[in-house]
Length: 514
Image (cartoon, rainbow, N blue to C red; front, side, top):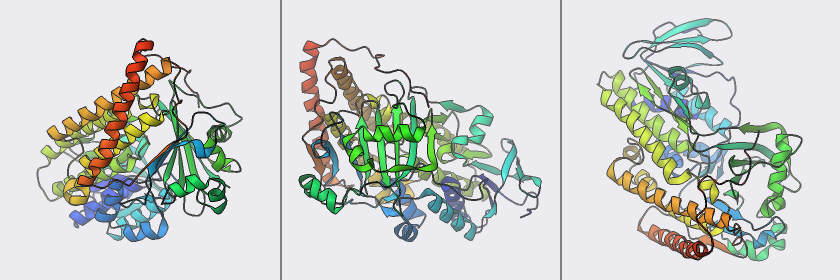
């Protein structure tokens, strides 16, 4: 496909979820916009982020209009579920289980990203966007307030295209951020990930499972298999996500200051060995095997960009930054950034002044990223293996998320996505409260580690919740979380009399190597 020069207002580099969503929203807000999508891959492959949250699900259903596609091509998600063990040999029925007793109140999905990305890109093209694919951007010239020049190589030729705006949707490649020197690794959160797709896994809700663990099976009124199941431990967590067609995505994310994967001949074998070391993992993956050629790893997962926008360029989705896959926030960031940038570019193309929006996006994205990190993730891996601390954290984290973000999205989706989370004084108050209880849970876990008390509570109980809802009934789960936290504080007072304050820098393992 040969395109004449200077024939587009916007060039979007990357045609997966963030790029295609930005293009689609821009065309809907400004039908006259001339949008070019440049995608390097001839076909999309599966990505690590297969699970949606309530916010990203609302964006896809209420804003993008993908309800029909999601319902027919992907699996429903029944919330998230945590499993914690005291030792590798205990029975799965004796493990601590945290999660929902009933079906999810709000929609969520276990998605095949290759299928979702392809469908969304098709929607953008159908809306009037031009597409170059496969095509590689070989050079980029950015001029604040002027014409941006993108050099694109296809199988037939190399051409330079002039546009008013360039949108970077290249994900971890972060093309513009790295080019301009704004890319920053988040060294305060040294986490790595290894993941694969498995075949031959045991079915959670099968007849033989119910026969072997009848009390466990009867305690839960919804299906466990369609949840995002998490195996938790000191310094690490694993996800188990079902995929349409029967495959299962499983991976481990770990803090390299605390944990290292067991040795093995290759990454797939090391991941499999780690899964088998947890009682629930052993029950599910004993006869499973990783799919050959579908084992992946990332080191140094979190990063951000000092600036996410200029007068002529903008970053969306993972090109702007990434935090941690726990709680699946990646598509939330994609949703907020793609919506905001599309709205800003539509106003610019219509001739409106957008300097204030550029300043807001640069300032508020940094606030959102830092607040989200400090509230939820900083040093969280020190208490991930403690059942009562994770119960407190899960209840308070999800309740706060519902109060601060989910409630607004389901009240008025269009209005909610116009601003970024943790905005203004209410955002600062919420971030301060969440940061405080997270820091307290970290201190309690560190004291337990120093006293040799880790994981001792992880047997013989489960805590199943009625389900989170974005209204006043949420006070029940919030109160449960506070009580869990305060009970842990009482136990910590007893340990303080026997154990001196642990060193903040104390760790128990050498950094892992991928």
